Length: 207
Image (cartoon, rainbow, N blue to C red):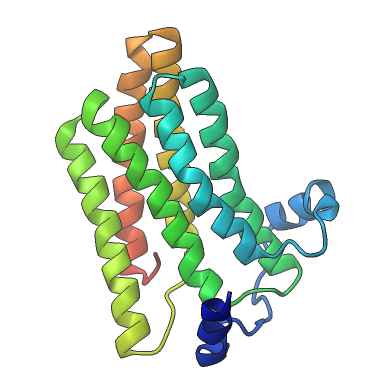
């Protein structure tokens, strides 16, 4: 715990709350339906950290063939991506650390699913492209943080990319649950579309 305190003290600017510059319609919807029931001590960063910690459990469920539990767990964990951002914006709890942790948690979740499912059931080279793009995003964000002392935020294109990736992974899992090949074909198309959104997000300085 002392390590965490030392890290916060040395990087206090990363944990300083920043006001939201914009609040999206879905933020307000989540605020009145789900976020209002969260305990006061739950912060956006804690939700993002939960996603990081929960990803290995989702990975293991799917790895050992528990696809029914896997698809539900994956959806629940992926849904926390909407919760942490909406909580941060509606309660003005945006931090630079959260701007880094949130997309990193997303990439860990999606990257693990690419390794586990996409390479095995979808187009191999499409998986390479998706994984490569995520690595590029991480490296770019690191360079901006270290060299330019700025944090690249997720933009609308990046959020759409994440949504399509989640949809594609769900399609693969549904195909495995119901043994329906057509869902794999749909997943390939959706994942291909996500690459387009990823490219736009990258060139518009998002993550």
